[in-house]
Image (tube, rainbow, N blue to C red; front, side, top):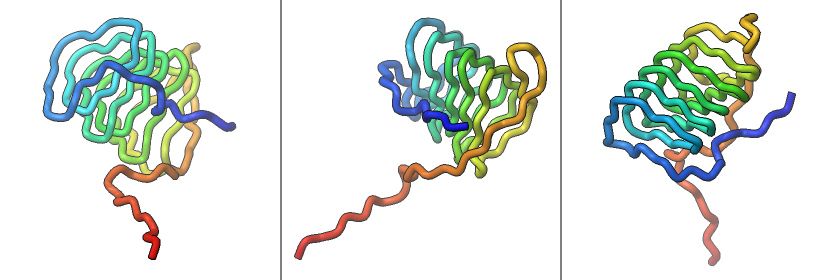
Length: 139
Protein backbone atom coordinates (compact mmCIF):
# COMPACT_ATOMS: atom_id res chain seq x y z
CA UNK A 1 0.00 0.00 0.00
CA UNK A 2 1.39 3.39 -0.96
CA UNK A 3 0.94 6.38 1.30
CA UNK A 4 1.98 10.03 1.42
CA UNK A 5 4.14 11.38 4.26
CA UNK A 6 2.34 13.88 6.48
CA UNK A 7 5.26 15.99 7.63
CA UNK A 8 5.22 18.64 4.90
CA UNK A 9 1.89 20.32 5.68
CA UNK A 10 1.79 24.07 6.41
CA UNK A 11 2.10 24.61 10.17
CA UNK A 12 1.70 27.96 11.93
CA UNK A 13 1.51 26.77 15.55
CA UNK A 14 4.86 25.71 16.98
CA UNK A 15 6.15 24.74 20.41
CA UNK A 16 9.90 25.28 19.88
CA UNK A 17 12.85 23.45 21.37
CA UNK A 18 13.62 24.70 24.89
CA UNK A 19 9.96 25.40 25.73
CA UNK A 20 8.06 23.28 28.26
CA UNK A 21 4.28 23.43 28.27
CA UNK A 22 1.69 21.71 30.47
CA UNK A 23 -2.03 21.86 29.78
CA UNK A 24 -4.57 21.35 27.04
CA UNK A 25 -4.42 22.47 23.40
CA UNK A 26 -7.64 22.45 21.33
CA UNK A 27 -8.52 23.78 17.90
CA UNK A 28 -8.69 23.42 14.14
CA UNK A 29 -5.03 23.79 13.22
CA UNK A 30 -1.81 21.91 12.59
CA UNK A 31 0.93 21.94 15.25
CA UNK A 32 4.66 21.23 15.28
CA UNK A 33 6.23 20.32 18.63
CA UNK A 34 9.98 20.48 19.21
CA UNK A 35 9.76 21.22 22.96
CA UNK A 36 8.27 19.30 25.87
CA UNK A 37 4.53 19.00 26.39
CA UNK A 38 2.48 17.27 29.08
CA UNK A 39 -1.29 17.10 28.87
CA UNK A 40 -3.90 16.83 26.12
CA UNK A 41 -3.73 17.86 22.49
CA UNK A 42 -7.13 17.78 20.76
CA UNK A 43 -6.84 19.12 17.21
CA UNK A 44 -8.70 18.77 13.95
CA UNK A 45 -5.41 18.74 12.03
CA UNK A 46 -1.88 17.35 11.85
CA UNK A 47 0.11 16.92 15.05
CA UNK A 48 3.81 16.69 14.24
CA UNK A 49 6.18 15.74 17.05
CA UNK A 50 9.66 16.45 15.76
CA UNK A 51 12.88 14.69 16.74
CA UNK A 52 13.54 16.89 19.82
CA UNK A 53 9.87 16.91 20.84
CA UNK A 54 8.76 15.03 23.95
CA UNK A 55 5.10 14.42 24.75
CA UNK A 56 3.41 12.80 27.70
CA UNK A 57 -0.35 12.58 27.57
CA UNK A 58 -3.31 12.10 25.27
CA UNK A 59 -3.07 13.13 21.61
CA UNK A 60 -6.09 13.38 19.27
CA UNK A 61 -5.88 14.61 15.69
CA UNK A 62 -6.50 13.80 12.05
CA UNK A 63 -2.89 12.75 11.55
CA UNK A 64 -0.28 12.18 14.25
CA UNK A 65 3.30 12.04 12.92
CA UNK A 66 6.06 11.31 15.43
CA UNK A 67 9.81 11.64 15.04
CA UNK A 68 10.47 12.35 18.75
CA UNK A 69 9.34 10.77 22.02
CA UNK A 70 5.78 10.11 23.11
CA UNK A 71 4.26 8.30 26.07
CA UNK A 72 0.49 8.10 26.43
CA UNK A 73 -2.50 7.55 24.17
CA UNK A 74 -2.89 8.40 20.48
CA UNK A 75 -6.19 8.74 18.61
CA UNK A 76 -6.04 9.64 14.90
CA UNK A 77 -9.01 9.84 12.55
CA UNK A 78 -6.82 9.34 9.45
CA UNK A 79 -3.32 8.05 10.22
CA UNK A 80 -0.50 7.60 12.72
CA UNK A 81 3.01 7.80 11.28
CA UNK A 82 6.05 6.82 13.37
CA UNK A 83 9.39 8.03 11.92
CA UNK A 84 12.82 6.40 12.18
CA UNK A 85 13.96 8.46 15.19
CA UNK A 86 10.74 7.99 17.17
CA UNK A 87 10.53 6.38 20.59
CA UNK A 88 6.86 5.71 21.36
CA UNK A 89 5.18 3.99 24.29
CA UNK A 90 1.45 4.30 23.68
CA UNK A 91 -1.86 2.68 22.99
CA UNK A 92 -3.00 3.76 19.53
CA UNK A 93 -6.42 3.89 17.86
CA UNK A 94 -6.42 4.76 14.15
CA UNK A 95 -7.44 3.43 10.72
CA UNK A 96 -3.86 3.47 9.30
CA UNK A 97 -0.61 2.94 11.22
CA UNK A 98 2.76 3.24 9.46
CA UNK A 99 6.13 2.86 11.16
CA UNK A 100 9.75 3.16 10.05
CA UNK A 101 11.80 0.01 10.47
CA UNK A 102 14.24 1.86 12.76
CA UNK A 103 11.60 3.26 15.15
CA UNK A 104 10.98 1.96 18.66
CA UNK A 105 7.33 1.31 19.51
CA UNK A 106 5.84 -0.32 22.59
CA UNK A 107 2.07 -0.56 22.87
CA UNK A 108 -1.11 -1.73 21.16
CA UNK A 109 -2.64 -0.65 17.86
CA UNK A 110 -6.40 -0.82 17.32
CA UNK A 111 -8.71 0.21 14.49
CA UNK A 112 -11.71 2.48 15.00
CA UNK A 113 -13.88 -0.64 15.37
CA UNK A 114 -11.67 -1.90 18.21
CA UNK A 115 -9.96 -4.74 16.35
CA UNK A 116 -6.18 -5.03 16.51
CA UNK A 117 -4.38 -3.93 13.33
CA UNK A 118 -0.94 -4.64 11.88
CA UNK A 119 1.41 -1.75 11.13
CA UNK A 120 2.68 -0.92 7.66
CA UNK A 121 6.50 -0.78 7.70
CA UNK A 122 8.57 1.65 5.66
CA UNK A 123 12.25 2.41 5.26
CA UNK A 124 13.17 6.01 6.09
CA UNK A 125 14.68 7.56 2.97
CA UNK A 126 14.48 11.24 3.88
CA UNK A 127 17.81 12.88 4.60
CA UNK A 128 18.22 13.37 8.33
CA UNK A 129 18.64 16.99 9.44
CA UNK A 130 21.91 16.18 11.21
CA UNK A 131 23.57 15.04 7.98
CA UNK A 132 25.56 17.83 6.31
CA UNK A 133 24.54 18.59 2.78
CA UNK A 134 27.38 18.01 0.34
CA UNK A 135 27.52 20.11 -2.81
CA UNK A 136 29.92 19.67 -5.69
CA UNK A 137 32.18 22.61 -6.27
CA UNK A 138 32.82 24.01 -9.68
CA UNK A 139 36.41 24.44 -10.52
